[in-house]
Structures are given as C-alpha cells and as structure tokens.
Image (cartoon, rainbow, N blue to C red; front, side):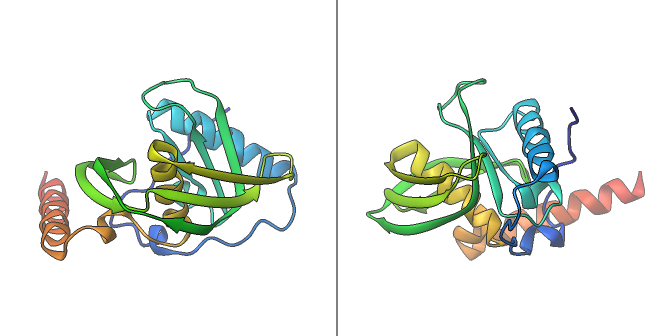
Length: 172
C-alpha cells in the first residue's frame, strides 16, 4: 500500500472538477486502496480523489463519527440527487485546508446516488453527520472547498494567513 500526498490549498488542482469513472478497473481499485490508507493515516473522515491529485470521481469515507476505523465506504461517481433543510456543521475541517476550522451551513438531509466499490448502484438517504461528510466530499469533486462556503471576510483572512506562511517558509 501507499500513502498519497494530500494536496493543500492553494493548489489549483483542488479547483478542478472530477471526471466520471467510466471503467472500474484495477487502477481504480488500487486508487481506492491508497485513498483509504491515506485517509486513515491523516487521520480523516473522508477523502476525495481530487485531494490526492486524481481527477476521478471517487470518494472514500468512514461511516462512524470520531471512530478511527469505522467501516470504509466508497462511492464512485456520486451525485446529490436532492437535499433539504439546513444545519450548521460546527467547526468543519478539511485535510486540504489544514489547521483551519469554521462553521459551515449545509443541507440537513441529502439523497445521494453513485456506485459502490464493485460498481453496484447505491442510494443513500441520510442526515446529520453522514450528510455533512457526503456534501463535503462531493463538493471536492466539483472543485469546491469548504472555505468557499464561508463568509468572504473569513475566507480572505485565511487566504492571507496561508500566503504569509508561504512567504515566511520561502525565506527560511
């Protein structure tokens, strides 16, 4: 197995939209294995292929909040079919936006469809924690980071901090 490098903001690859997986072959299965290992190593709750430099429409996630080794779930070509309500995802974070957490408004309920690891159709209708995870990871597949969903002021403060840190590292 291998731990993949997780791309971090402001890497422009994170703004790309993922391409649908047309063939669920051995390279897709290997990517899923590597993504799972990378997510658990980070540690994280979910990971989209875009975050590890692949443009494939794949997400992996842990189905238990706060559990390091819940049951690994895989969705290929996931789409949010419908959503409703509103909830506040308190102190949401992201492996691609390290050391930053912020409250994010999300849909309370989502209906998601995609394919499982074996290419079989999956329908998920959920709320609360899992709804937030799915929205966050599917956002990645659409080139959206959670900081794109916070106020412009907070987003700009974060961007300035990142630029300042990069400039500081360049001088060391």
